[in-house]
Image (cartoon, rainbow, N blue to C red):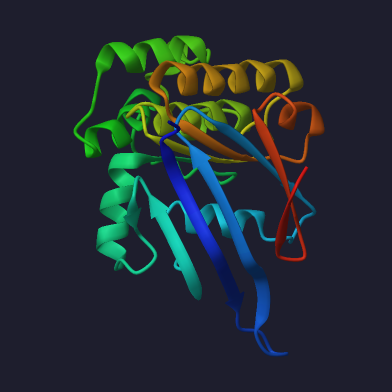
Length: 223
């Protein structure tokens, strides 16, 4: 029997604007099983990033339920959602959010240390697979945008999270490097039975995942 990792039920989310509430998600429902990969596509502004933020407990819905590992995180306070996120979720967003005062190696290990799951050998292996082994003693300001993106990906994967949420994780990489990074993400899902929910504008990359859904005008459909 499949083990449901993420279950979002009838999620609605709006934001205030000068013209009244701007409805972004209108009754969205999706589920993701452990070991499954799901590509989320849609036009810019369709609510893809909002959905990802809600799935990771970075924001709360106006209504609906979000179950992560069987726990309802939709009504949790900020501290409780942060604790769940720290132990269960790996976030890869377009903003790298690297700590400028830490070396590459320390940035990669940061999330795993916070989750009490730091494995130096695994961090070294991740660094090698992402082409970062020679950069571990540098600082973020000494890296290119593509290199910083790879560091952010390594940091998210280092704790071996149950759920990986990735917003255009290869957007700052050339095609060959992007393909290899996606291969690493898919390998990690297979090796650890994690789940991957990935936002992408690339049909080619989306087709490498096990399922595809499309977000239009706040509603989801099978792609």
